[in-house]
Amino acid sequence: MNDLDRAIRQSLSAEDAELLDRLGQNQALHQQVLATFEGQLRWVNVAGWIFGILLFGVTCVMAWRFVHAPELEDMLRWGAASALGFAGVALVKVWFWMELQKNAIMREVKRLELQVASLAAQLRRP
Image (cartoon, rainbow, N blue to C red; front, side, top):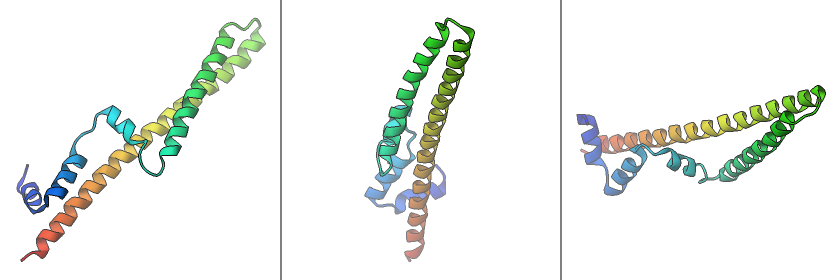
């Protein structure tokens, strides 16, 4: 911790210091995932998870039908459908990982805002 960090810590109230500690800690992956189900857009994340699980199930059924298709035409249809389904599952996963990254960036921005506010308050004091 450098001198600037020490000065920031000293100027913070107990409540602000606790908030800074909570924002500054690295969260485990399961904590980050659970944090996506909080806030205003939690219903979007819940819907995304449900859609992803359903799409995965349907895609597995299509892949099963592909493996057991009796004719080449059926294999091509079921194979193409399952490939598109797995691509859709991948897109849902990419979207969710982007949500995790967005939350991490927002947490860092809030942490910086708190530090800037603390420095501004410290500079205003005589």
